[in-house]
Length: 377
Image (cartoon, rainbow, N blue to C red; front, side, top):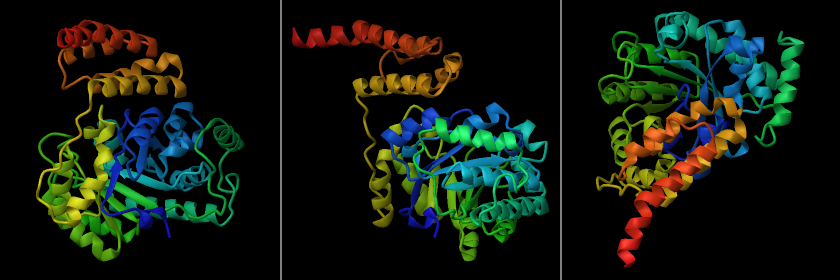
């Protein structure tokens, strides 16, 4: 039985987001929010099998993130077969195939959401991935799967450098899941999900927009609900994704659609605390409650501590030259308090955690300390 079957219902997970859910962000969210499951950024199977450094970067994780699922994308079944061995060897808890990325470069090449137009290839990829997962579980080595000696060596180095805890030793086949969209340029999720269910994944996660919509407009949760009712007949779990901005929206989406879980994405940006409310979500769903759940009010001191913690965590896992990738996260934290825009403007120019610390100290000295003095005078 896979880990999916042991998770509480409804499942509240962190959605995979390209350029966002790196090891540092996942570590912060797992430490301070504790979602039920987290997904990596998507990784190209070609990069994995060729050993390209940047292609392996999203596969780094820490033990506190478990259960953690590696998300892959591509269009070649043979590469998915090999990549399934690598993901298994690295000690992940599951493997997810991205069939929903709307990026022009990805989809136009036949990967991501481009697979919606190629259902036969999508099923071939799922079958090849499952074969890879089961062949590894039955003792097949990376070399026997056709991977180059350099990849075998890279896996060994990867293990030595990571903090992900002990990988599984009994070689269980990892569970397969799929993340997709409602369709390509029109909503065909009922037909498309029926196709995907034939591949027998354990979970199908559905973002409530078509590829053509990108992230515009509103997510169509009625379409997700129709698909969920249909997919569940095949014994597959269904997760919904899209436009979940708060705990109360989480409850409303789950109650209206009947999904087995949700994946929260943009609402977690600058807000790892949102997952602390997962028990409240489950209680409200269980009781069919319509009362509002009070949203966590994060004190400014706690928010500033989190900003600095995240910056230092990023430096712990990444080369200093990559710190500019951290700036967008710093900006996301800066909202909902006085003079946040000015602080955000400074954050997006920082080059290391010391810059962040100086900015926070300056903000406190200029805006917080005078108020405290005025109150105590």
